[in-house]
Length: 600
Image (cartoon, rainbow, N blue to C red; front, side, top):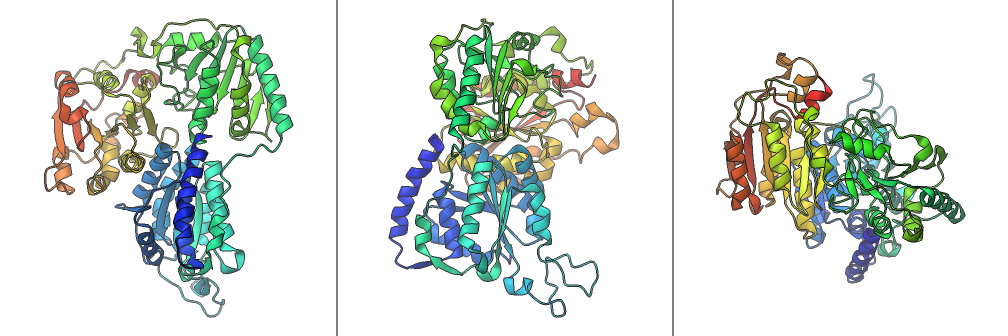
């Protein structure tokens, strides 16, 4: 796998760095940072607090290799780490303090858990000696919520118990428990399971000395094939079904991205030599470019961009779904119905062949083998379908909302603009908002699209823009970061725009100013006050308010479709060389046609 080979190269360079350290032991803090560096991570997000300050001091031992990205609050830092993981294909790292910090971040961590983003959360905690105080001689320290009774000793592990429900591993470091192994286990588990994990670092362990030789034991980040005979057997079964098929299809799905399997997926597609039709799910976007000769479209049941996509997909007599992610958002509110008898699912937890499930083998073990073994000479040519079905707007998909043209600019207009605006290598960040329902149609042409499409925590997009922007800078990657966010969502985490300016990020924000929670207005209470927000924010002054003292950013307000389309020729917007905020004035009841029809 390509990402692992990159890590091997990184590890070799880091081992050379380690060999120049002129001491036999290092602190446990240094060990943590060096292990993080061995995974290829170059930035750490977080907020300082009195229980993590001594640990944070050690990050300056690695100034040339590792950067500290301070955020406005811990929730935002968690969102940023999530996006960093999704874009970098490494993992995100977050540092917070005991109690107040870690609990502020836990909603962001929950989203990473729900959406399979590998985030390592390091929490500075109370000292071991404080935790070990007796029942009749204890201190009730700050940041601790206390016991049910004032005469009881408080539970110093209460927050760790909370975190256990939204993480795949919790390692509470202890000198008697081989802390180096605990740290390694946490990093390896987060990486392999692509979900959050915790390292709880007591404040009196920060300077604990450990042998530097431990760093030469490599981290185990590969997916080992534990049952090769079973893998070969399942490959035989899948290839037998595929070779018999008269009209086969491949469905690219979400977990292919999260488990870093894109290169193996694309090798499989390449080795099919354009004989198999290609589809993507909504959450699986950006694995395929949309420009492949056999790309048909985005399949999500009745929410597919075009009914012909659903019809063509249903005509398949064999479907190989790779990275299967079954949830209501990805499955068009469960209108996607794929018969088991013609489906092979490859998932991170199981393989399913015509409904027979194997839980002791995974996509990560099977896909590399399948991609090498497939022989296009044995494949029959699948039925050809028209290209660009995603871009055909059918009459029945036009919004039924008679009020949609109250203002000169609509979300449908913005959809058409954005399809022309995005380019190869761009990162498109979509907030949980009404416009999210418009993105099923997009052809990304090699760009990436991220959001919280399943967990749907509003406010994610602005901090995620920070994380994605830092990832691009860390790895010198091409492309722009383009963010679409509703005004209600933006009000939740707007302060992180200050961090974007602080760290020299240059994304373009499109703020949908539609005076409230529009997606909720469609669902319930179109005129109810609970769907209103504080009106009349001066969005075009926001960047100046948050720190743009030298006017290095650009803000503009758009009222009409004509004004919007002029931006396509505005180099200050298209080049992505400065931070741009574009405020779009929209009617509070205007929504993408797909959303209007879904709830009409």
